[in-house]
Length: 385
Image (cartoon, rainbow, N blue to C red; front, side):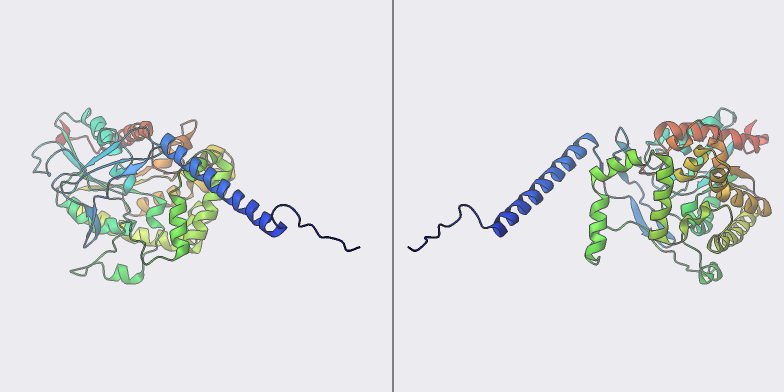
C-alpha cells in the first residue's frame, strides 16, 4: 500500500529563520530609534548657523551677527552677539581710551566664550574682576576666535595692537599646536598678501566618502553623547580612550602628555619659541606687554586628579614646556593647570564630552586669571590711579 506524504505545517526552515532575523533587526532598529528620540527629548541640543566667515587670515566672526545654541550637556540657551567689528561684545567698536587700561585677548574657543553667555564668559568675568582694582577703568577687547592655531595668533596680533592696548593676553592650549607649522609657512609670514587656511566646519557632505558620512552621523547620536558623558567620568578609562582616539585620528597629537618630549612635539615647541619670540618683540615695539597663558585640556586635569607621580608628570608636561618658552622669550607666564590644581576635582570643571569649561568654572578660572594678572602688574601703575 502506497504511503501518502503530508506537507509539514508552517513555513520552511529557511524562511522561518529569515523572518526571525528580520524581526530581530526591526526590533533593534525600533528600540534604537526610540532610545534616540527619548535621548533628544531629555538632552535637547540645537544651534543656529555659525557666525564664522572666511577671511584672508583664516576665519573671523561676521559683524553684527547673532547666534543661539544649546549644548546637550548645558542647561540653558546660549546667546552669541558680535558687534560691528566682529568681536563678541554688546558694546560698540573700540574707540580711543584716554584713561585706564586696555587689554586685548587672543586665543581659541575657550577665551572666545564658547558654550556660555557673555556675562558668564572668561573674558567678561575677568574684566569685571580687574575693574575692581583699576579705578580709572578697564577696557577688555576680546579678539579670540575658535579653531585658531597658535601660528594664526601671530597674524591676529596686528589687529590687537591696532587697538593700542596696554597688554595683550595670549592663551594657548595643546589643540592649538596639533597641526605643525611648515617651514614654508614660517618663511612666508611677512609676505604682503599672506593667506591662512579657513577652518570653518563644513556642512556639505557631497564630496565625503560613505565611511566619513557614517562617522559624522554617529557623532550626532544623542544616545552616544549621553553614554560618553557618563563613561568619560571614569578618569582612567577616559585617559586611555582620549589617547587612543587622538592618536588614531591625528597621529602623534597626544604625545604632549608624555613626560619625555617626542620628536614631533619638540618640533612644535621649537616653532612655538620662534612664534612667541617675534610676537613678544612686536608687542614691545608697540609699547605693550605680552602675557602668555597655557591652559589645559580636560585630559590634563583628569591626569592631575589621578594623583600619581606618573600622571602628574604627564599632566604638567605641556605647561612646563610653554613656561620655559615664555621665560626664554622674556614673556610673563601664567600656568593655567596650576590655577586649577588646588581644586578637589579639576576634571569636573569641564564638560566631559564637549570639553569646554562649564558655567561655574568660567567664573572660577576668570577670577584666578584676574588675580594673577594683578600680581604681574598689568592693572597697576599710573594708568589705574
